[in-house]
Image (cartoon, rainbow, N blue to C red; front, side, top):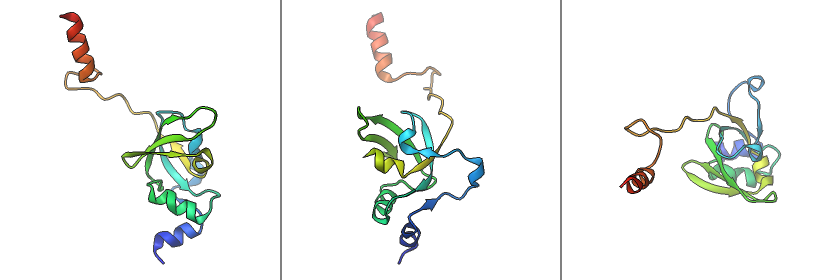
Length: 127
């Protein structure tokens, strides 16, 4: 068996760090747009689910962000490993994360925040 299979068969994959210094919470509790690091995968789930989540990129140490969620407790979309994936709340609950400080908005070469579309709209209004 591979090392990943053996690790996942224990139904818990941890990111190596002292537990006492981290405040962990379920992925489903993450607010939209807030970045986090995955600390533990498969907390209380079966080995097949653990392997699937791991294969999708939900691995300890990976950066994750909640993009949006469906109303009435439906699935949520998470960005992990440069793509977006939807998870049911029960699946997201098995992934424990530690929140990170929010990233500052990126600035362009002029130092102002905004996109090319914003610049175009500003120019067409001023003309």
